[in-house]
Length: 178
Image (cartoon, rainbow, N blue to C red; front, side):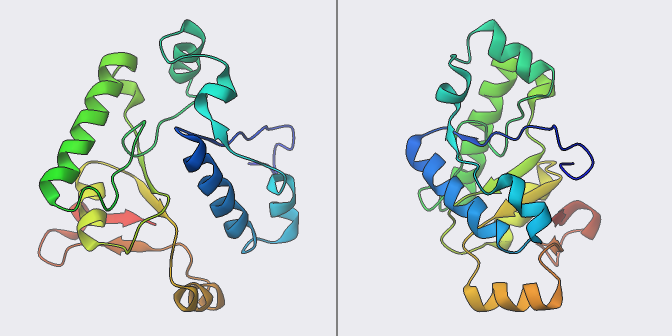
């Protein structure tokens, strides 16, 4: 997008200050894998909280308008993502249900997240990939890939891949772009 439309502005936002700091670090790490021409416009980007970015609360009309215009999109559960605190399938699903219900009630069905995002997972789970796919997510982004795995993926040019999270369920239902 930036190559075709250099006037495009990119803003990074997260629900909390700590999440914004982690997002900034994660994005900077990811930029190291890109050619300089693509990465350079984003190198100075720093994530802030949604509240600080917008100077508004979700209840305000301006924020709602930006969501309706698809200028702001929610990822994963909206305001939160599950991590090591949600260690069972039931807790993962409850967390998603609560987040997606809140988004639907406050912003309408069109605000449903289409991309899953795990900023700081402690290990990757095939269950997580399967659930993301079964819940209709189009893609799933995550960080904290072991350095040796990341180095191999860079060398093999396989940083993007299709993850089939379940061998026992139909592939067309459980594959997700990562």
